[in-house]
Length: 319
Image (cartoon, rainbow, N blue to C red; front, side, top):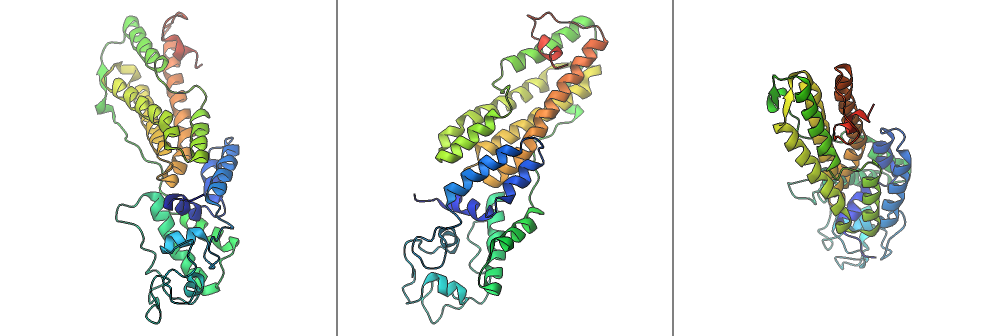
C-alpha cells in the first residue's frame, strides 16, 4: 500500500495514539470511539514497523526528510539515508558537503498556509530530530513526551458566533405569535438532515478513514451545509422578545455544530482539526438540546401547547 504524505504526517503526530484519546476523553462517555479511530489510523499508516528500504528511516520519516522510501541511499553517496541522519548529515546531498549546520534546516517542509495538522507535524518533526540527534534512538516514551508537549499548543475549535444584534426580535409575544415561532423552529429541525443518533457522523468518518475514501465524507458535508442553512433561517426568523436570548443560544450552538461537521468532513486533509472538533462536537450537540429545552420550558410556563401533529411538538418532546 502506497501511503500519501498527509497520511504519514498525521501518523507521525499520532505515534502513541495519545492525541486521539486526548481529544475524545474530554467528551466523556464517547471514549470507545477514540479506540476505534486510533486503531484505524495506526493500521493505515503502518507507522511503528515499516521501513521499506531497510535504511534505518521509517517510511513516515522518509516522507518528512523528502528521501525515497524505496531507495536506501537517496543521494547515492554510498551511505544509507538512516546513517546520514544519525551522523547529522543531509540524506539529500552527496558527501562531503552534506553536514547539517542547523538541526531544523530540513524540517521546513510545508508552505506558509499551514493547517493545524501541518503545523503539529512540523513542530513534532523538529523536536523529533533534536531528540534523535541527542539520543540516537527515540523510543515510544520520548515520542509521547514530544506529543504531550505539543498538545499544550493544540488550537481550540473555532466557529462563527453571533450577537443579539444579529437576530430579528419582535415585540409581539401573544400566544399566536409564540405558537408560530415554535412551529417554525420545529419544522426547521424536522426537515433537516441532522442525525438523531450523534454517533452516526463519527461512524461515517471512521469508515472514510478506513477506506481512504473522500467520497465517504459527502454525508458529513451535507450535514455541514444543513447546519449552515438552519443558522441562516434562524437569523431572519422573527423572535418574540422573551425568547431572544434562548434563540441566540440555539443559533450559536448550531453554528458550532456546522463548524464541527466542516472539520470532520476535511479529516483526510487536516486530521488534527477534525480531532479537535470531535471534542467540540458533543458539546455542540448538548448545547442545541439545552437551548431547545429552554424554549420548550418557556412555552410550558406560558401555557403554550402543541398538538402532536404540529411541528412545535418536537420542542415539547425535548422535556
